[in-house]
Length: 278
Image (cartoon, helix red, strand yellow):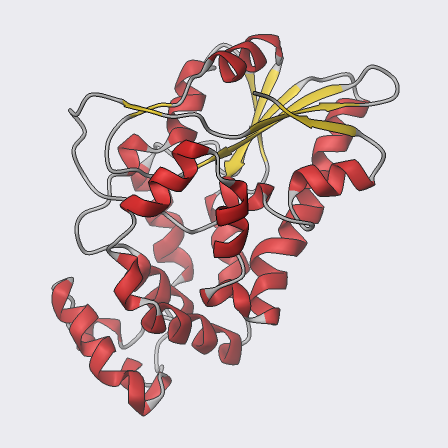
C-alpha cells in the first residue's frame, strides 16, 4: 500500500518491535510466512524478532511489493514518467471549494508552488501531499531492511514501482479527485504518524484494520483498486509460489494483512492453515 509511515532520525537506537507475522501451511506441506511491514518509520526498528528471524531463515525466497525500493532514483523516474499530462486544470479547480484553503496550506508547508503542479495528474498531487511535511525517512522502512537481510535469497516482485503507480494512474479522474479530497480531509493526521508506528510495533491488527476503513480506503472504488483487488492478485501469486515448491517470506505493507480482505484471511479461505506466530 502507499501509506508511508514516516519521520526522521536515522541514527537513533533501534526501537523494540513485536510486529505481526503469520505462518501459512498447505495440505501438501507447502509453507509461507506473511509479514506486515511499514515503508518508513520515525527511527530504525528492531523488527527482526525471533519468529521473524526463524521465518526468514526457513524461507527460500522473499516476496515484496517493489524489489528495487531502495533505488530512490528509479522510483522517482517511475513516478515522473506517469505523473504528468499537459493541459490539466489548475489543482485548486480539482478540489471542492471548502478544501482549497487546506490545499494552499499543505502546499505552503511543503514549499510547493501551485503553478508547479499545473501538469501533474491528480493522483500524483495526492501522493505528493500525503508525504508528511516533517520529513519521512524511508531509509528506516522495514521493506528495505528485510531485503538487505535476505540478500542471499531469491526476490519475487509482486508489483514493481511502475506497476504500483500505474494503479493510481489508471483511476478515473473522479476517483483521483476523491483520493486527493481524502488526503486533504486527513491533513491533520498526516503529520502525527508516530502513533501508527507504535500500533505497528505492537502488532495491533485490530487497530490497523480500523485504519484501513477510514480516509481514502473508506471510498468503495479506491478500496477496491488499492486494497482488495491487489490482495487477491497477491494471494494468487503466493499460492502459485507455494504450489511450485517455494517457501516464500511475504513482506508487504501491514494494512494488507488486516481484516477479512487481508492476505491471512484470503489464504485461510483458500484452504490453507494460517497461524499468527507469537
